[in-house]
Image (cartoon, rainbow, N blue to C red; front, side):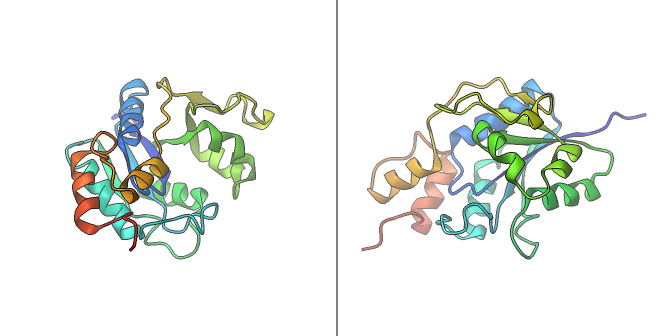
Length: 198
């Protein structure tokens, strides 16, 4: 009897994807012995409705370019192909339908963990997936008691790198080659993503 597949579900706007996103996925694969990590690109995130800077298709293309040489990482358009807002619980249900025997691990930042009780159907999320939590700089360790015992901290060196910083540098004409994979830097440049409009 084959063992159940272990799938990491890493959702986000990835606006754009950067090196720390890739490093977090690698850490999850190695430390938690996942079989693969799905990068789920949010199409219409309910908490960032007016803060998405690039179209979903462009963000998906950046993710695909970033992980092209990572055989155990996949870009998922499950939220892009579904109508309405991109709720995590719906995404987990859909992944569960496609892989009914898999063990699901939802990769989130510590800041998201603290907010999770306010998400849509948090109990169902916790039933379907074990949480893998990434430390975030400057985030206090306080958490709602309902989450105790529901997550594992992912051993990972906290990083201040953010998509906001990548966008800022791009808009001001600064070099981003140290922040994103080469294919992503090239695509951002060629498609004029995040550049300041004159």
